[in-house]
Image (tube, rainbow, N blue to C red; front, side, top):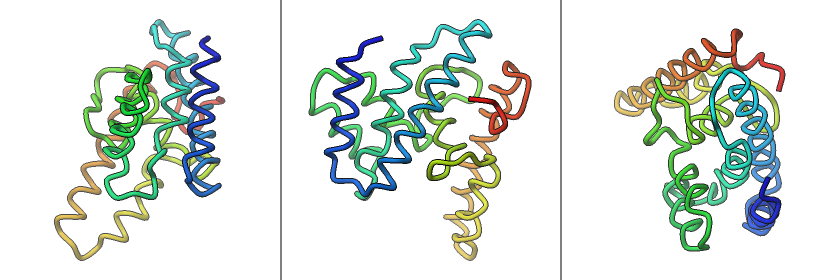
Length: 171
């Protein structure tokens, strides 16, 4: 465990200017990411659970900005010394996520999708609101369905190793 990097990421998050509910969400995603990585490691994976925790802490560090995953990627790279974490931040909205591979970015992505605020949520439920919100805009609806389908596919892949629905997994 690299406690210096963990402490640095927590400090960066807490000083990011994000509202308290975003900071609480990031902390929750960090813990789900960490525990999910450990559970997958028990099934034969070789994930860096601490990197997953740090990526979870930083994933919404620029949440209040437009294009927040890209802005967060650039911001964390600019800070220096956190490139793997920055790449996770840049991927947490679905960019560069593989649905048939499990690496740290997929773990944090999935942890974010099953964490609403600080609570747990089913993947389909997570997307129901955005799909409803975009009703009437064909392009936005298509994108929302694609993001939902991507998340459901990755959840199913992870569940094939974990043996139960991911949102019910005791983390």
